[in-house]
Image (cartoon, rainbow, N blue to C red; front, side, top):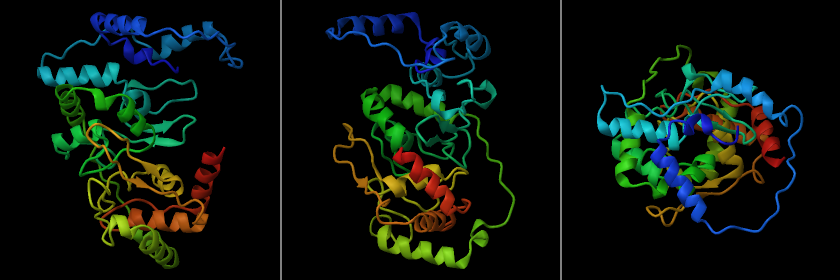
Length: 308
């Protein structure tokens, strides 16, 4: 569902009353309702009864007595008002998600962005991040470890930049403490799976288009230009976000703690699918990154999807 009531059920009555009071104080706008455009079967509200039975558990957040007050505050914000699991958990064909796969990452429907796993240190797991870096990423949109783009940039711009330092720290403490999946994937070195011709093409494209900002060694100049070397988000199993950034570029959000954000230009008009695949592959297998190679078809699929 578009309205994340499955997460908001955890919100306390006091906080929901405060939200209601604020909304009632917003000046009304005279605008007639328009007829909904939902097609069958989504226009049948009674079907929500079955959906709720499968995927909705009612009840306010209950503090964990074994954890600190700060951890519990972070859990309340992440699980409830923040509804982070709505993106960072895979969604099935019915629009529901499995509690057992919570925060393990998934594609965001209709947006063609991948929300990485918050439990895997191969993706966006925060187990080895400093609390200060997590706070900066959430509140400013940039940090010395990475930068937010796409839907997460909207979250930071519209919401998290306004959260108090105390609450942002609580969220960081909770996120850092999420169970970590540090399992290693055995197999050959991904670089050995790349044809020398592809690797050389990727190196040339990188040298011309990318090295000026991210450096020949991929270390970047954080926080303005994020590092690509040993970057978890670069080497994720899903290459969707990396391909999108090369094709479409993007800006970190302009926030109160990042007043002059640096952006990345799009290269869709300059690079062919083969060149996009080659440079993304080069980045994913260089400088201690262990991502899998990318094919021209994957690049074309993302190019076509983002043009629709």
